[in-house]
Image (cartoon, rainbow, N blue to C red; front, side, top):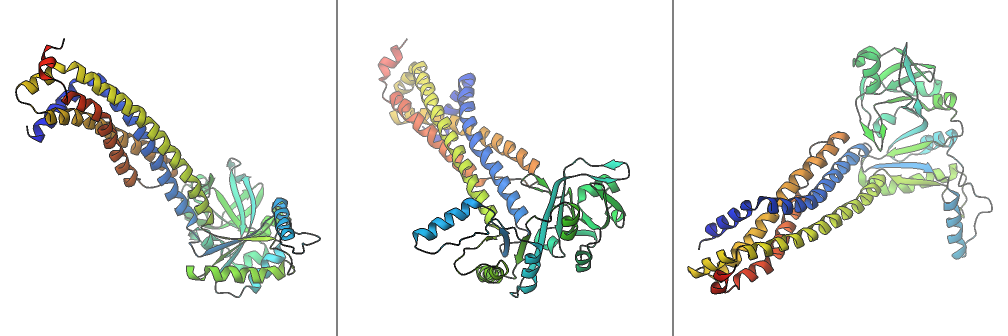
Length: 423
């Protein structure tokens, strides 16, 4: 008997038992849906994080203070174990001041772009006339280089300049969501208008193009002003400055880290025996940490899928054994008219594989749809995890093969005479 004939018989048998086949297909589909769906969502998250944090590129550095007494104690303990002298008075909790940040920017001679910024608030209210926003507006203080190093693009008007920073005049650049709310989506209308941030008037000198959200923060709902204004209006005189450094080439990053450390240690008044009371991070470090944590979710999805598929394999094998019992006479008749043992085995094995692959098809389809619903929420492109789809189909095919082996061999070994007499 030709393969297409055996496959045709197997397919008719599968479609003839719709309820039984449907239940098994649903169980298999659920396992693959969980596997593909979760990994599709993870791919969408990876894409979003990569887009969001790629603004500085792999050639960016961030300098911030540690402010962690536990870290200081660990450092001192390590030094004591090494027999080194520890500092009598630690300044690990000392924020980076305006004077220190500006001194670094002035003294840092390595080829780079340096930006200073200061966080204002994340719950400001912006108003124009009688209209006002919810208390969810992000207000940040920066300098002339802040937009470039943080992935913002000026849509209309201009960004901050050095005169804005030094004079501390009340000017700002606003995000696209504020333009939509107050200026009817017309960014040109927003220029030179007065808005109030927590009741404080600011003149709009520019607008940002849409950037989207990152880690729950909507940057289109933001206001950028100078860091001097943040210190003056938002009680941030004791807050720590953030220093960002961007070098021309990724190959220069490691050397730039050494230069940053060499420049900033004297400014922070650290002696040779003291450890750094500031931290230098590559711009992609946070992305790497997030993606590393996402791998745990991937493994969880894999475990869920495998457990579900093991249960589905057991169920499929039982269904195939029941099918062998119900079709004993049919098997006996096939053998009586010259059907070979291998033909019977292949038929039942194909039935099992067809059921498993049907489950894989529905599972992949549902998984991709559910995963891309999440990508729509994140405002990313369509995601299709080819590796996991192929893996899911292959593993389902293996499940069908393993589940069908014993029933197919049992059917192939049936005695045709006894099978024909079976009631």
